Length: 269
Image (cartoon, rainbow, N blue to C red):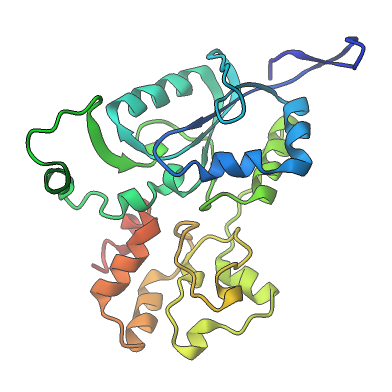
C-alpha cells in the first residue's frame, strides 16, 4: 500500500508509508461514519496509522485521489451516487461496504425489485416533480461495483471495523463473521425468545451486534442482514407455528434484508 510516511514529533521520517484511506457516505443515516467518529479511544490511532484523505464528517478538506482503502456506507439511491461510487471504485485498491445500507440496501430497499418503485415515487412526490439528480431504487454497492470486504450492521460494530482496519494495515485478509446472532445470544446465556413463541430472526441473521436486542427481551429484527447459512424455510415454519402469517414474516424479514434477502426467500414467498 502506498501513502505518506509517518513522522515523529520532530518531523523525522520513520520510513513506513501509511495507507491512504477514504471514508464516504451515500444514502443512509450516517450512523456508520458517526460510529468511527465516536471511537474516541482509537480515533487518533486510526488517523496515525492511516493517511485519511477524505472523511467529510471529520474534515472539510477532502482530497480526491488514489486510495489504498475506501470505506463506503449507504445505499446507492441516485444516478449521481452511482457515478460517485464508480469513481471511488476506480481510485481504490480495496473497497469496503460498511453497514446494512451498503451491504444489503437498508430499510429503503425493503421493497427491492418488486416492481413498485415508480408507483411509490409517484404516490409520494406526484407526477410533475423535478429532481436535482435522477432517483433510482435503493441498492447495495455490489449491484454496481465489486466489493472486496463487507462490514454488516446497523450501525457497524466498533470491534469489527477496528479488526478489519488492523488486518488491512498489516496486509492481511480480514476475517469474515459468519456466525448468527443466536451464537452471541447463547454466549450471553440468554433464554431463547423462540421458546416463548416470540418473533426473533436470530437464527437467520448475521452476528456482530452482541445479541443486543434479545439480551433486552426484544426479538432480533435482522438489521445485520441475512446469514447465508440460515435455514430460512424451517425458521419461517417455526414462526408460522406461533400464529404469524407468511406474508407478515416476509414483510418483517425484508425490513433490513433489502436485496440480499431475496435469494433466500424467493421460493418461500
